[in-house]
Image 1 (cartoon, rainbow, N blue to C red):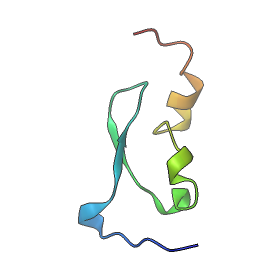
Image 2 (cartoon, rainbow, N blue to C red):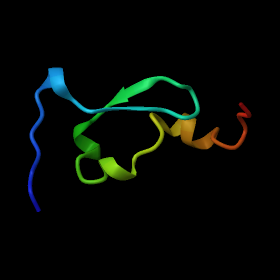
Image 3 (cartoon, rainbow, N blue to C red):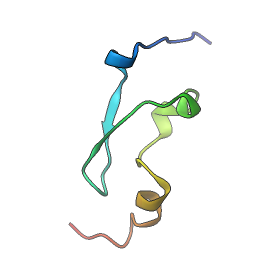
Length: 52
């Protein structure tokens, strides 16, 4: 497994589909970044209640 290193100015970002805000890579998501979809637990819980 190769390790990626990021500088704070170049951290990857994603858009949260619930709140439409960008969120950045975090150390705790290091191994699962490809699977992270929501920026927070709150957005994850509200994924079905919001209708766009």
